[in-house]
Amino acid sequence: MRRVQANTDIAAWRIVDGEAVIVHAASSAYYGLNSTATFIWESIVREPLASDDITDRVTARFGVTGDSVRDEVDAFLRSLEAEGLACEAVGAPRVTAADAPAAEPGVGGPFVPPRLSRFGELEQLVLSGE
Image 1 (cartoon, rainbow, N blue to C red):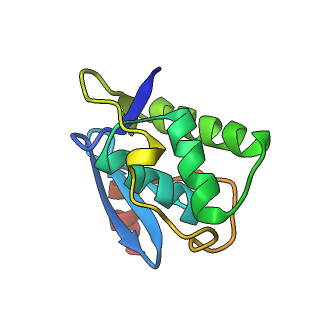
Image 2 (spheres, rainbow, N blue to C red; image 1 turned 60 degrees about the horizontal axis):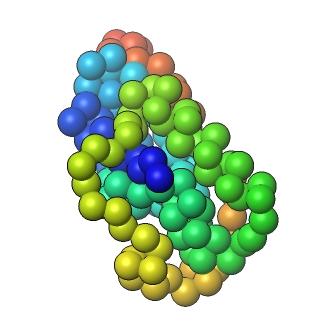
Image 3 (cartoon, rainbow, N blue to C red; image 1 turned 180 degrees about the vertical axis):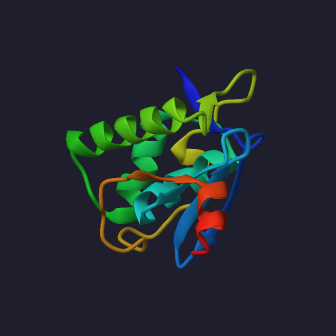
C-alpha cells in the first residue's frame, strides 16, 4: 500500500493558534491548514502513513465515520502532493493506526474537511508590509 510523508526537506512549518502555516522553500509559497488538515500534517511529519491509516486516525480523533471522510483525506493528500508538500514514502517501515498512540474520540474538536489554502508568495507578503 502506498504511503505518504511530509516533504520536510522543502517545507518549513509552524503551528499558529492550532493551525499549521507552511512555507515552500523553493517557491516561497505559503499555505494555511485548518485544524483537521493540521492533524493530518503532523501525522505525516512524524511518520509515513497510508491513506487508510490516516483516515482511521482522523475518525478516531474527531469521532466521525463514513466514506466521505476517506474521500476528504484522499483529496487533501492529493492537494499536498500537487504543491510538492508531501510525497510518496520510499523504504520507510509501514506504521498502522494500531501502532499509534490512542486518542480520545472527539478530542480534536469538531471535524471539518481538511483544507490546504495557498495564500501566495512570502516575498509578496513581506513587500506588502502586512
